[in-house]
Length: 132
Image (tube, one colour):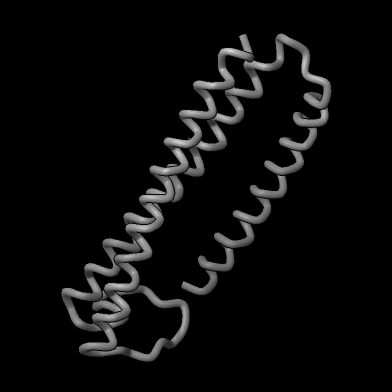
């Protein structure tokens, strides 16, 4: 489990670095946007916000589900959870508090994703007329 976790972190960092490098090169070309490149900027904005919203909602749903498992078992970590290192086991009220906190954090992430999507929709609606 530890090796796969390290591999995922290293692969994510490498992918992020490559994506950042490619995005900087693209943005350097957009420093003086021509009228033809403005729709490309809006498309990039939509993709960036869309991926961010999907990740926020997915993480929120996962945390909410995990918190529900903790509350159902009154045990943290819940039965069958894969762990990277030894973790002290919480039982009873302490586990329920942890489960409710995870559920609350999950719900907050989902709401943040929805709010970000709504704000981006409004931004896109206002500025898409200027890109044409």
